[in-house]
Length: 294
Image 1 (tube, rainbow, N blue to C red):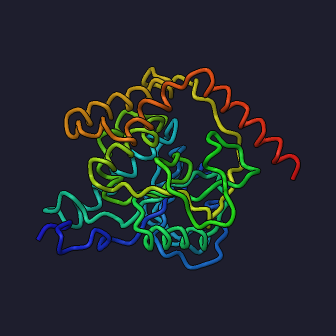
Image 2: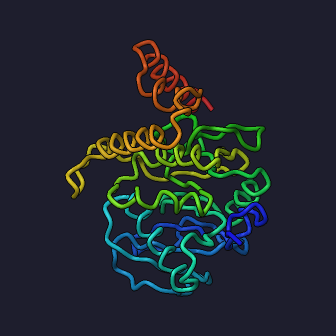
């Protein structure tokens, strides 16, 4: 029987996995409040490459340490996907497509939240059959996208995509994008184009921000102007994955070009006129002013 046949629920896979990045020196899981028993497996990713990889107990938590000197988050995606593929090959060498973790969460080391909140996020994802989701951001957080910020009096809201600050993906969806992690250092374009495109192609289109789970971002947002060792900036990587997504659609599902999702993702938001740009700037100024008045 196929692992993902109609007789086997797609969720009937391994325990969820949550990766938190780490500088290899400071307190591991330093911004995670360990207030509950995790209903998932921990991976701690040392992005400096200082630590020895392997299973360990840190702060009373059973964790798997991965370590590699990386430049940005896209490489963490790559190393995690490679680790999962190697783990499955070791355990079930004749199975090429899983079973992957039910969900894969990838959380930056400057995100303040708790184990109980992660458990709740996974519970909501499961209950609402979400394929991609993220906690919302507190209003005192530095942010890139205003719509990621918390909205009160609601459990979740449907969106087209979530950024890579603290996303959760279905395990098989995360692994389906593995080839596109290989030469993307920044992670730009993965969240905005490639993952949503694969969701459309795979019929895994349930994407949401969880307002019932609010986290806080504790460091300033970094610029996309850095040139990485592959000779590209984050913006250039974004454009490469945008084109790769368009190529996938043209090859595998050209009918998507006529959908509202395609227009929102590849046309309207990519070619805003001066009026739209002006409205966005005004909206951001007003939002910041309202935050200051609270």
